[in-house]
Length: 488
Ligand SMILES: Cc1cc2nc3c(=O)[nH]c(=O)nc-3n(C[C@H](O)[C@H](O)[C@H](O)COP(=O)(O)OP(=O)(O)OC[C@H]3O[C@@H](n4cnc5c(N)ncnc54)[C@H](O)[C@@H]3O)c2cc1C
Ligand SMILES: NC(=O)c1ccc[n+]([C@@H]2O[C@H](COP(=O)([O-])OP(=O)(O)OC[C@H]3O[C@@H](n4cnc5c(N)ncnc54)[C@H](O)[C@@H]3O)[C@@H](O)[C@H]2O)c1
Image (cartoon, rainbow, N blue to C red; front, side):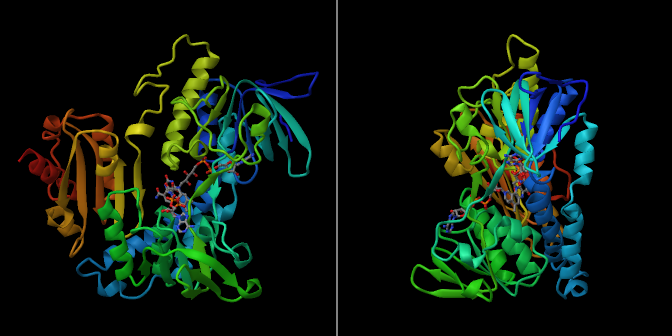
């Protein structure tokens, strides 16, 4: 299982192979930690139990967006003069599924392995477990074991998995999780989606567009509860217009599937029964730390790992936790940002740099995790948000004012799609005269988000934003409208 290179040595007493850094998990985050520390000249071993590229490449971001892009383009084309008749028919589901399969490289990781090895990192295929201070044991596919030792750091980048609620009949009913929802090779006739978070609304959008009869069951007020309220409202309206059923304030109490085959029945709290061909539970994530040897270093198996801003695990001087597993922001781009910061911190500490640049916005502090996490929800319409919502800013004790704009009233938006519907909000910090958060909802707003991220991260004063002139007639003219409303 082990390979040799000039950077590692074998300890003759323990037969452990020694690297500067050992990374557990080769998802997007583990890959980026490895890349950063290799670029700084450190040796690195990467341990992966499934596919190099992680959840993101095979069962999350890539396949879901490959399913959603045709759905979004189709919805937009239907709102474009001259195209409406040309796209009256349904999506070609077979072609969309084939397109998704291409984006997952047919669930093969050869390309990513080649890239990882080109960085000079050493890949160990197998299940990795911490085995005490700076030690990792890898159990290979054949059950053989290899011990690895880290001179400087071990980075746990093992990501997260879907959680299923503890409901009678659920395991036997073979529910879909995000894995099946992103990799299914056929379109179910009827799909019930439980959970109105990001996975729930994105997968409801995709499978509805592919022809499934979709029922979205939400236990709260509406979808996307952590975002500005109008985001969930507009997405729910659009799902209903697309023919999905969206039900709020409903709880699932049991699930039944006769003999594990045939239709599935979802039982609701009032006793009502909803029948479908598949049921997707999009009910959140759990850390993949239950079998990672955490107990060997005094940590609780199955827990999220709490870290400081350099991603060092609380109380440790060598153990890092990066990406989903630290529960700071369960997003690929934010995990990769943390990987760049953690990689720089590991390198600086290995080089005995006396003082790390760990103040806010320093090279060794993932400050954006607190102030400016961007996210695009790829529904039709899209939701794009960064920083704090009005409610979050108020809860954090900031003196803020929300400024809203109807996106449909912006010339660029009305040209983008007939009957364009959307909304924007900026949350202004009245004491500092900067933005705490921005949310856009509407077709095509995903690509607008980075302008807002720059404004929030750069803490650009409102008076200076006046001089950032949006091009006419683009959707970005919404910035001018928001500023005009704010400045009066
Ligand atoms: C349906 C869906 C859609 C999503 N869409 C987006 C999106 O559009 N944009 C976005 O930014 N985020 C999206 N996300 C979130 C994104 O997938 C995660 O934030 C991202 O994958 C986290 O990366 P990671 O490297 O931390 O973990 P993962 O991608 O989960 O990778 C962890 C890796 O570690 C391996 N591993 C685990 N335990 C061990 C062990 N003990 N030994 C060896 N290897 C181990 C796993 O096999 C895996 O390969 C989506 C999530 C879902 C579920
Ligand atoms: N485009 C993107 O950026 C993107 C896309 C998909 C996922 N993600 C990330 O993946 C992570 C996981 O997404 P998710 O949607 O699975 O989780 P989530 O935590 O965002 O949403 C889960 C939802 O399920 C509800 N829920 C939980 N238990 C329930 C139950 N028993 N019955 C009914 N509802 C229940 C919760 O109230 C919550 O609203 C998110 O943190 C998200 O950031 C990102």
